[in-house]
Length: 201
Length: 272
Image (cartoon, rainbow over all chains, first blue to last red; front, side, top):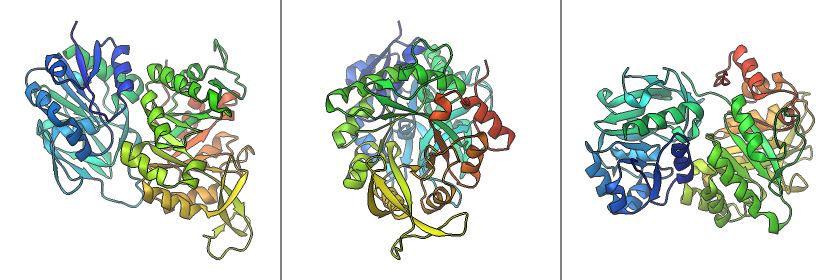
């Protein structure tokens, strides 16, 4: 059975991600071991918190993710998605893994909008046939919690969402996907995303 | 496409069991928090809050078991409050599967706990719960709030479940909590809590205007319109309620249908 590695680098609610994947039939291990991640058939990069700390903690596990492009399906969630991109504006400008073109930018303080963007918001599908969104209707609701938004060229956009400005709520480059929202906290729609992911592994 | 307002049922948990009665039909065990939370999930709850009111230190660990069971079965955001007094408590709670921790008295007594938690785990998981009470005494230092009847008062932070006045101005404390790294404010007014007369609109809207982070209104819901008022006049980002849901007076889906009808952005309840 295909094995999915959830990258454990000391940040994020790994248990929820793991249980949600198991619920839809995934064979999952939570691991911080480079060899184990390299051997996996799919890699999930979860994460909440600060970008620079996430990158620092990821340390030599970055190698496994860089090697995965074009080889196995990778799914970055929330901070995990932002770390897949080129840069984050957090703390000046920090470099990410560069697997999907784009930059994480801080939401601009705007009258009438709270930061973080916290709660359920809708996604608008930019592509009709992305396998991650199979069976997910346009306008479905997902749970978001973030203060930085993904700015990525249109060709990498899978879905977009509006809050203060339009941002990339999911992106893809080759075999690497990222979702800004938390599929593991987004009820049935989120479980469908994870089931679709497992289908690709 | 806009961010929706959230409806959040809160469960009071003592020694690992739900306290306060439940009128849910078809629950195998009305006292099991996880089973009740799952029922709320089916009704379309946007998040769930577990408030641990366990008194004895020995039984504190029971909430951890409840959180892990909930995290295994509930694919919704889960906030846990009550008895969180140290960075270690925060860590244990999040490790077990909670997404956010809520701190009340402990944050007032040691505000650095907010910073420590935010630095270690991110601001998004630190909720500062603020209990407030109206104070009519003269206090030129405090922020004056106008009430519906034309009088003014200031709102004082109270701790230990509303029993201890602190002399702290609630609006200033909310701003300080935000500066220290809180990601959200859970505001309960002791004036309205348990009254079923509706949320305390004056202080909810003042705090919502005073901070840049989301505010959850709590205390006083008795009917559907109260939710509407809390969002529209109280400017709350989310509304929390306990007894109206527990006693089956209304379901989360009824609240959501009503608010959608009134034109508010709400994630629709699930249809089966």
